[in-house]
Length: 334
Image (cartoon, rainbow, N blue to C red; front, side, top):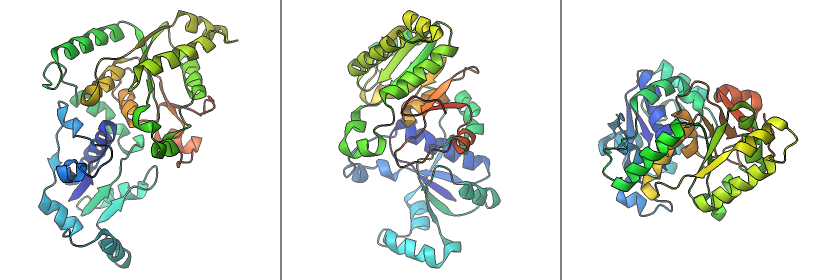
């Protein structure tokens, strides 16, 4: 039995779910541990979250019970440090695994060889290599229930449908700018300085060279700031020495998306997925907008690094993230 700790926001939950489905495809008995979303844990959590993936259609998983947790982690009285010490003394009996790198091939090999292993796994598993082969299946099975989600208002449903029609009628390009919690001091140290103005200039230039008469849809948790920010970027591109970029920038229509907020902002992922091309932030939220995008000719752009603590090796990352274009904080295409 394998338990996967499910935690974090919507994008992280989708990754843990996709990772779960991958391990199931290898023959493992996998269950999601939802304990992190319990009231006792959320009371102590700085950024409170709910289990947003449960609102999607086509999501199916087995939930870990308290007995399952105790079987792998022991009783609550046994501290995590003691369990770690026991694991070092008896590595063959180790029942916990915590993600510490971009991709853990050794973990996948262990489960391929021993799908009946007992293991408790913690991590966010953002790396696409874990489940890239399953993304077409996830796109087919998982959907956003715009018309039946009880948490959406009548007005929100109408706005989502109207915007989705507009997106489908154009060669739409989504551009995601995350602010909100990324502006906090602790998060700035971890995520700041990656999605710079130069990053977005480089990403936009790359897309404008390839897209035909695109329309730009700006997604953000701070739509007013982000619309002004993007308009300034486009104004700079209108002065480009590259005639193709300049002509595309001159003709570019820009629309800030301001439809759903708070817990309902997960529908921004749905709207991003309808776009022909996607420019993401260093955010799993917009990664999934691109992943759910079913256009075969799509351009997916992401920053070289998700976090400042991660190194960037172009050769390695292109293998781990097939089909993606990487842009540095200086605006250079890798």
